[in-house]
Length: 355
Image 1: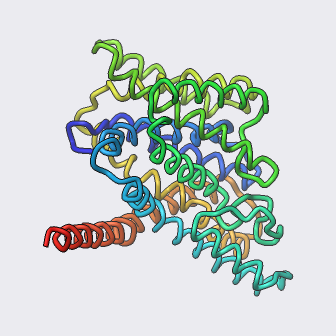
Image 2 (image 1 turned 180 degrees about the vertical axis):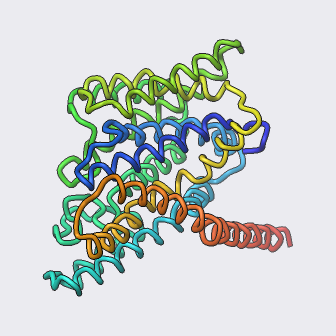
Image 3 (image 1 turned 90 degrees about the vertical axis):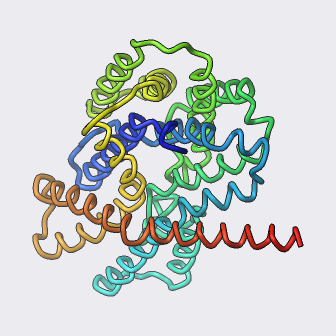
């Protein structure tokens, strides 16, 4: 998207959500509840994705962008960090098994590495490498798998890109979530429930995009945005809330947050901070588990205890720094080089066809 259409407020929301989900996982892994409802950030990511991809690609998919090209663009955006995160965790598992002499077959580890690197779940992985997760080497990666699936389905179906169809299916998916009674997708037992979860929010994002185009401007949108930010902050950081409230937040506050954020203009330092948070959100999200296992492993060897105050603070700092460094020296350069090569290849094919 060009600068005129780039919503800094939504980037800020994405950055806040990423930091919050990291706090949630640190608290979960260290047995000290932090941001107890911030797993809802996953649903907010799906909603943002539905809105932003519709804004950026819906018109192009209808006229001049082949579905295959769109899929390649999405994979280039997502996969370099997926591969890096998988490899980071795999090396840690190998060293941990060597130190602790855990029983693990090479074939099991190789399967986890290959499936993780191509963003596919390993639902029968042994517990020694994280088999209680659909993606044993990087648990939060389950949402990236669901993201890729819904992106491909959406891009491949003009029918699904229709605003009324998207709205109807989103409502059906919300009904399925209410019937299931939990938000899953991350474990083998709840894996299937991840599909109505991503369907509800991603398709809801499409509906929000079309609603945004139909509504008149108003000075109250900015006020609404900040109110929704406060409600979201209170929701994420409150003690564990009932599932009924969680689904209600997904169906009401989250869409209103995105809709009002798309109509809110940020300026000055707040805008700069929001844009930076948006750029850092994906590296932080996909790398925080691999960084955690390394830092926690070293901490346990040296300190030999869990300490949420010291280790938790160190983890947040190191995860942020590692994510920034990886973004600058690996993710952006790799994506830029691949995209440059793709543009050159496409131009070359067009030139040969013209001849």
